[in-house]
Image (cartoon, rainbow, N blue to C red; front, top):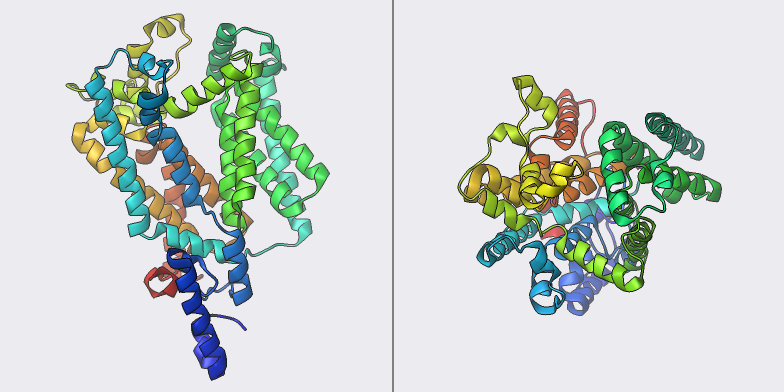
Length: 473
């Protein structure tokens, strides 16, 4: 029996209806707040008729959705580090990182961080973004013939391969990672900075985060052929290690986790494997880069990088820009600033010049990216910090509304996961990503297509009325 708003019109027998109602009551009593995730959610979608059996399976397997992964990242990278430092950090590394900032500024930075992320979490549920994503998870994906999936994989793989060839050409037909093996920690860091500055990052990001990732997504989750998956993984590793950074591989694993939670009905076990893979990859990169030489050093590097890495520079934003604000134009990308005749250094660059002038003078300094409220404070002070979480959630809401209102296929699932991953990464990179970046360009294009299709009447978006869905009441 298909379950939807039309179930009453099917003249179901009284005993059948009574059984359903009784089952709902039992589930409500046994599972309490988890009731809304249970089998008896009455929804109807153009491309997905959800059955009672399917909903039972969803409850058993779909314990996670992308919002849970976002919350996990917020907790680990932003919220737990400072309490951990004050209670357990006997080595004092956190206090070494923030040694040039008054402790009251450190505490102030953390309190504003709590405000920002708690506001985002509350708005996730007030705006029912979480509910929309849960309903989207339950929808069936519109599949293509296997032969077409193979063509999509082949096209993505070839495009990623062309990007790889271009990067090889740009590097003098040598791979930077292999040439950097055996260098000590300092020389490896210098090599990484030089390589990063010499690479065409647009080609690198397109090859890694779009073409290679799409090929790997289709290989792992759709085709499921060993040789296709092996080739996809090998090509992705070759591209990712061009930058000599640890974060790209970790970001790809998180991207796969987001896509998996949208594409399938995930379990904690499967997503835990992906997270363990991410941690393992980072560990391998630590050893290969010469950053650590023992498991003890690796453990300390994990705790210091993961727990403190995203927050440690934030107090310097609140200290450096306490009395002087930056021009709004400096939050824009350099190619936009150049249109007005000059390029102003961004907040993250000024912070690294403030915290590590030796690296700057040696030409090996990058940027001191941190939690997004730091950049908001640099431009608009306290008012910017207060308003920033609301603008962040606008980005999440637009993205979720558009993608949960269109057909669910391999393309929309991939780009939905891709944008969720990019937005979540931006939470720990800077507020500028939420103001004007490639993310907003993609949003604008999607909204344009969505509005044109809606008013032209050529397609009717499967917009879910959240308030009319019993599961969301």
